[in-house]
Image (cartoon, rainbow, N blue to C red; front, top):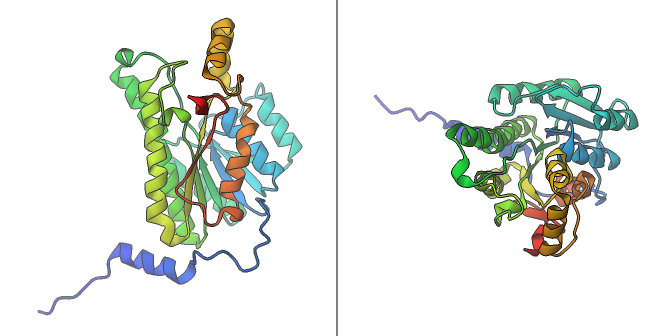
Length: 289
């Protein structure tokens, strides 16, 4: 019996992608850095860095922003309420557990069913725990890696599948950290640094794998940002924190979450059509280490 060559699934997907995707920039591009008409999903955008990114995306004409977060915004979350009020009808929330691939798939399909498209995924949700490496339990390690690494991986791969199916030149942006480059001497956490280094490496490898589909993958590495976690440490010992800030050199203050947003807007926009596989450090102090 003669052999029958069955088409390889991956090869078929690549052929389909080649038929409807081109990595060339659109001929009618206006070359402004804008998110006009774009629908962006941001994980962990109910507060903190994620909400800051969302607000800057909206200020730069994003059509719709979806916060994929585990818990629904509560009435005392005045920051989320303020952004929603400022941009009525453009801010949405979907309950999503980023450690569950099925939950992410469902959230993305909800976005597509409501808006008919999805243009960008910001894999931002994460957690940290600052303590000496010898004090970490296996359960704490598992929790950090499940959310920061596995969650980021699942968000990116789910978004990539949707982009390919829709024929969309989508953009994926990870939130990494300056601790992916060097130790955090202010608050040691070797496992957290390791998770963020893994995210930064995913950026480079995914960018290489998915360039043929027209999908771009980049990341941003913040330094110290004013969030609930950093505010806790500042208030716990303000004099010690100020000494550390002066010691690091550079800008002796915490960043506001919105100060990160410009990098995300650029990486999500069509203006960055030839930008993939890079990390943008935004760390007024930490970069001086």
